[in-house]
Figure 1: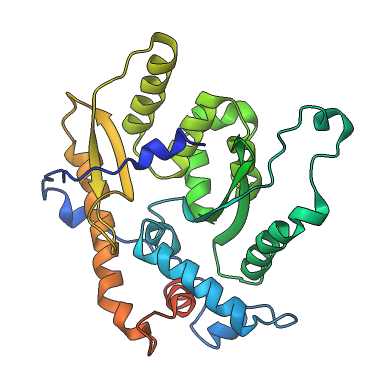
Figure 2: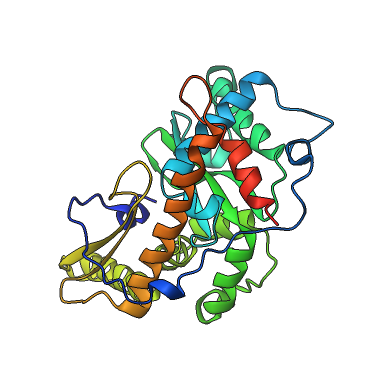
Length: 300
């Protein structure tokens, strides 16, 4: 997954964008029921969140809202987003263990699985329309270190990607309505270039950016040629650049009907978030992120 992260390369330059098509940019919010007793409906009544778990979930969700996951949590711009990553020393480095199956030291490392389970269990208790939260271990390891990613997926947006990019996803038999967790897990453990392209579409990048990055990676690996590139930055609450960013060829000119539309749609969502964020502030300066997300996703 290290190569996937290159989609998010940090770059201090800000792309100057045209304001054309601004009026055509409309925010899409999910709304399926009136906002009545919403807070009680999103958390399992049989296993309510503990105070500790509530704090954990809110801290993760606030980070997501302040970064690029905003465009998944209250909008459909990004079908999936990363919320948080964790690294644990649990990966197998013993080649003999592949045969014996004894690849995990339960006495020494169970505490790490408990941490992962605590995160997954907490998010499993949430029931927000159109949103799915899940933990996914990376395919690759860094020696004994295993990276674990917490994702959020907006199901309707994932279905849109499957529909619009059937030319790619159809070869695997993926159809609308598939569980996003299964789709993304299969993509993570797939062939390298399929993985790059699949994540590119699912992370909400334009087709031209996905094409470029996949082809550039192939050129770099097969021909040892680095393809020059520039970066298109979309701002987030936390910073103007570095979180929602994609590469494009050095000679490419960002297009009004593609890049500019994506930029302005995103900025409209960001401006909306900025306008309501203060309403959900806690006394300590943090925000009640879950309440904000619930409020936006249950809007009429």
